Image 1 (cartoon, rainbow, N blue to C red):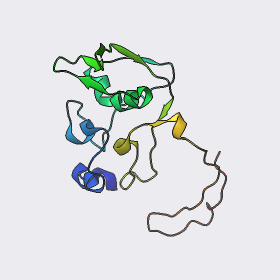
Image 2: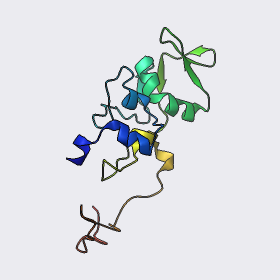
Image 3: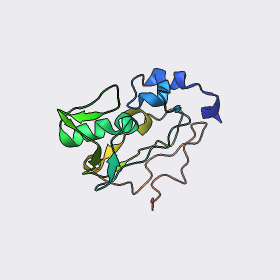
Image 4: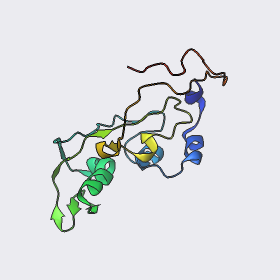
Length: 146
């Protein structure tokens, strides 16, 4: 309920430079931080057509994989250097990271998708658990996560 009444502008004051500006500025996508996506999450070996929408959503991932900048012109033609890129095949799996408190979570809506190389472990126990009033839930601390 708290998320529904909070304007996107309030969320952006906490993290004013999101990776997906179309989510904050509505640049042709119609997204907001509360009504985000759909955002297809690429996986290793997946080939995607590189058009203006794909460039908006994935250029940072492609640049990270290729260690080269992508550019797009007024006609929506995507280039890597002088080479026109009509499609791209991803070399990594990516993950959308979301926090458990959407109002105060700075997550993939703000800093983007996470490549598999950046994941160093997996959750196996709950370290801390509090309710909406800040009271510690002792029955959940150190509980195993399946």
